[in-house]
Image 1: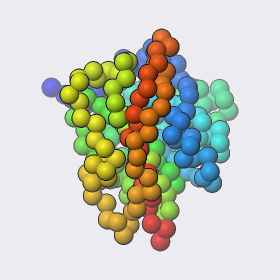
Image 2: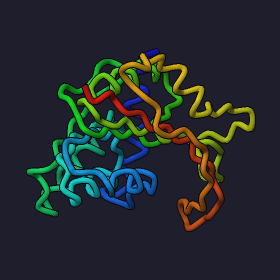
Image 3: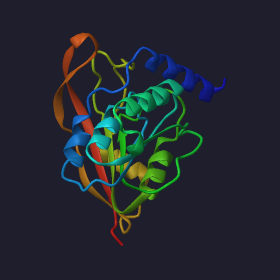
Length: 208
């Protein structure tokens, strides 16, 4: 079985019926608003709501996704909004490699997949791609919403502490600024609502 092909095909189907854009993830906005805009990397950009929001707030954003459909629609949407100069959208399989460059902010919002992926390796690489003083924001699902593709009641959602431990970063080079599990109301497809838990981990690279 070619899991890379299967993953790409799954996410192509997932995004084929979805328009580009959408709302910014609220925790990303909360973290980014007070920051001085710089360079950002959006891992698994999907429909591009986070990328568009960051670009509109002055960031230069590299957005990557495994699905050509997501990347192509984001490029077209960025052009329609006259944001092409601030957004670089690339098709990238993070199971096989990582985009080049260094960044002031790297966002991994709900970076989950049912396909084989060494997630800890990807996130460690992301931490290493931060510029001095840069931030890595990891927001994971901490609960199952009624519209989640994974409805397994036995699913274990790693806590922020468990995610931090899996990255095994040298505390002399990176520090944890935030590790908590806030709850919030969420709206899914068809207007369904639910209270969900987010597992939030914010890591900063040492300034020097």
